[in-house]
Length: 365
Image (cartoon, rainbow, N blue to C red; front, side):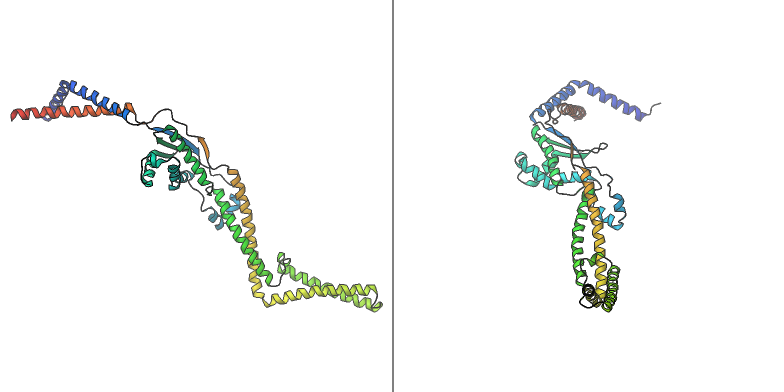
């Protein structure tokens, strides 16, 4: 059994439906009139065209120097600390930068198009008319540009890609490019330090040839010279015991001994200078060997990074350039007319209900 409250509500619903049914002409007229009015307004609005372009950002790939970098420990993390984690987000940020926006504004004279007196206002209008978003599954980046001129909309969408290519040409955005820049910088710095270390080591009395050998090799060379000197002295004494001093054999033995004594004198002079600066030499030699080893490491990594970068190819690969749109995207006349019709119907229904409630109040007064 229905409660009195339910029966009362049902009566109100039936009364409202009956009221609206009796006023169907008013409702229909308002619906058609507002729908037609909304449709007419769309013909007064300047049409908007949307141009769309898409491109593929550079894909991160496994480099041939990954294993070599792994062997560098902390150096590997330093070289890769600037690697791009999300090139899609970074490229969109670059295209939305003030630099790119100002170039677009100047090229297409958007200050006049938007009738903006301030550049900040023109930038805001441009941002409102441009949409950039990454594809959810295909990895592409899509650019959509709205404009009243279809050709200008297509040109602006393509220009964004051109400006991005122009900007990235001077930037190291890929992982291999960043490694190349890092190791190139380190290679130059290490080369300068190695030159200074070599000059400092040469001051200690060692020649450029000595720098290529270990101190042990230099000592062995001195010992060999002393041994040859002793052998030459023994040979000379032997020849003098049997031959005269003017004989050719004795003269050659004396010349050989004199040459050995000159070489030993140079080695002893260098050794004396090294002895005076023994502590400084050890530290200088250690610095030299360190810079030399570091230079070899950076040189190998620099060549590997250049090889990886050359395989990456073009940073920006255009998939679909923006074409001049052949139909407008705004305003949508059907949707606008339908929305206006529903708005008119709702307003007419509200008017009918309010007017019906005012009649009993006036009669009672």
